[in-house]
Image (cartoon, rainbow, N blue to C red; front, side):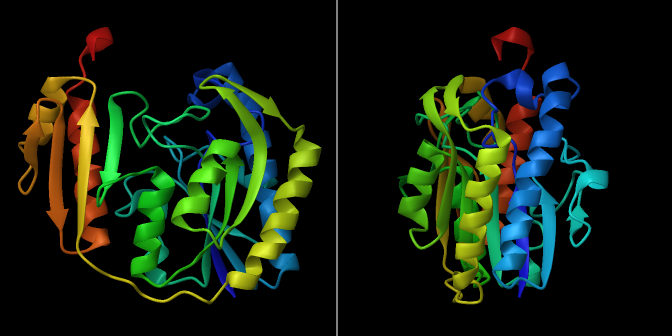
Length: 275
């Protein structure tokens, strides 16, 4: 069994504020080892559950956050930016299962550091009419390749979201949301136990996926009209309201590639503190 881990950082043990995950900050340096410990706890559970190979795709911001020298020596890691499928790079090699580690709730929803791709410029994303977190988008992409989501780790809001988009996946709650910037957190030693056991249990679903490809529609709402105007310049993307764009794609792979371009164009249109 070959398993892929898509490793984000906002849903990691103890993370509660932007400084914890902002590249270069003192807090980010503090949480890099904790992030790595969460991944190692997951890896331990996956191998205990029967995995033969584990590949980690760094999925947060610079995608250079995990400490390679502290990772379980049995794994390999894809690190660095500009990957065609971003957070899900490698899913097209069709692993037997995928883990969403350190994930979080959607933009416009309750949850610690809740967002969808852009930290604050996007106020909502909808996949086929349903508000979408990064987890929901990535699960739809995994389904296109017949890869089951076997585990989701993050706060309680993230795991409740996953219960809706992939109910059969194991869930590991490492913190309970109090607000966007506060949570009741487990110490790393305790969250490691939770993650390891959930990963071991999640392996029971590895290899059970089935391909479910279809056309999809994505809508994105921004916090300012000029971001929608900038994104609407992309071919196939239409401006549907003052702050909202949308597009249709023949596959989820194509939809996510277009969505990635939308977020890059919109982020490039942000100007200082006015956004």
